[in-house]
Image (cartoon, rainbow, N blue to C red):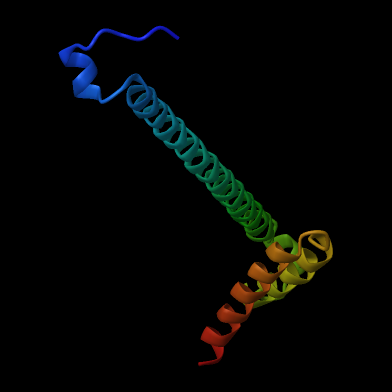
Length: 126
């Protein structure tokens, strides 16, 4: 390595070694910032994916429950009662029994339906 002439710029930096060291520190801090941001964005992407999946599952559960209740109440044909009075409670009981059989592979939906059914029964008793 050739010696540099004694200039004002050389004296301001102290030496070429100090300038190289400062430049190296800048690169390392920049790289650390980039890696940190990448890690944060990855964690955020994982969280958003989980939230999206949970929201979709809840939406699907609500749609299935709504569809099922529409079938239960839509299928309450007065001619099916054969002259007897068919109450909403009987329709719900029949629907709940059917739901428990049809939704065996979906325990969360079963639980939601059972909870709503029990809440409805409690309101009629009070």
